Image (cartoon, rainbow, N blue to C red):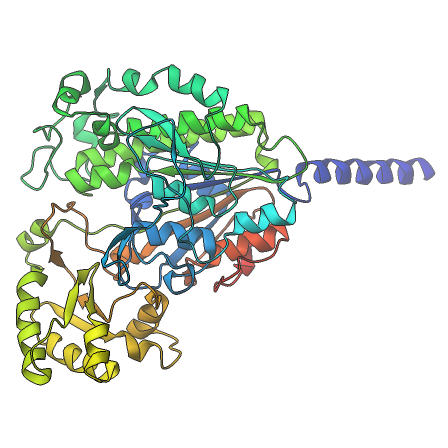
Length: 542
């Protein structure tokens, strides 16, 4: 009997040790994967074409939040990345768009431009930094809590994606320089590239990828979730919009390496660089939790020139699935899945091709702000007299001349309301929100809540303009096929998956706000919340 008890105690203690080893108190590595314009339904749309070791693996073995939404107006990529990192919306983190109008300087400001820092490893860029972020990120709090012993790196084709997710205290944010074909950064982080980065750049992987032909992964007749390969809805690249794409021929039509971002190979290159970074910097190999963000941008650019209903877009998702499978295997081999916390999400959703919507009898239209401004300005002058009342239109927002309004001793609230009432009569406009009204209360739902989450007093305009579903703003510069910046479900609904270390297998159907992710990660790591976070922890994860 004593032997049986002793054996039982030994069995229990052994299994306790094994479980403790398989479930460390904290993950030693967090891998954040952000796939640009990855709308929620895309994973299930292409489910039967995916392998078992990529998206399917993390969904089947992790926590899948199926009803995750961005809850602000004018949804865009830069604001999405900042929300993921800060656990708050533009009203708190301050990144209202990739560019915005600065009333003091009277010009547009790029969200990460910084004249006080210099580019590193390139002469084709200006300095970039996160100085315009008005909140700390969850990785900033991790670095502060660990006295900077935790390492944080970000990798992405787009500079703002890497800079904004890295926050104020990232060790280094890396992005791809289209002019040189090199991974670069800025002096905000380091003064010169380390040897491992130089070594990777010297291998000239972009040239290797551009020496290939982009062909479909599967036989063409298997792409049943897309329109035909040759349609009038696609812009294409280099004057071509059907497979195969011989990149050795097409690259001659581009003056630099920019063609690479319109192919799935840019995702593969990003993955290659990230794996090299993990191993070169020994991420996840000490007791302090390290972080790497990997931001995949090819889906966004391919959607811009081919649309989300194209064979090219479907093939990009299939190839990305293979890249993620490779990444998971490499991290498992180097750090161990049991020691690694993964999350996968997107910066925003994606809109359908406008012409295709029209062809299937869904009403759409273009809203020309330049012509509308003439009418609006005449209306305002009829009420308040001659004056340069309108500064301009930027990012679905109208900016008024506050100096002239104050000089005439006119109530800004009254001015906004009169303009909003007139503007709402234009065809294609659903709602016009005066920003003064956003400041007067707290709203729990609907357009007013989204407007409140969008409004950052120092940078936002005077009116938020919301168009009907299917309508697009008409700009002077060319727009992508899927650009719309709407706050409808097509743009707001994104996947959110957590996988790996201590994450239970489950699916959550209740509505989750995108600002909940950073807060949840902070609670999982037992660190302070980002300074201006507004989200709630996803309690089912614990």
